[in-house]
Image 1 (cartoon, rainbow, N blue to C red):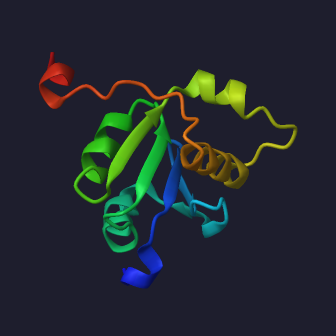
Image 2 (tube, helix red, strand yellow):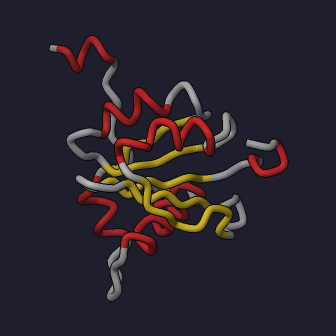
Length: 127
């Protein structure tokens, strides 16, 4: 990824069983990565090609959140796991789509409004 493209970005992942929707905004809340669907099997290579070391990433807590955190932590500046129920209370909308949900999550991260959960270290997860 070119340095001019990287800048400070707030990247959100809307994780589903058969897809991951990725989108990002800059500190001014402007969309810098339009929401796009990525196959979970391709996500590792996609993230290595498209994410930057200056990116802050957020995803909602799901069954595979820790696996994604482990993949993302070496690639980006921070990974935040959002409490899914609290995020839903903040982002209630009449029209819900994966693209809109992704950008809402990115904007909440940029604004510092993510209700985060603790990311346990690997040894704690193994217990």
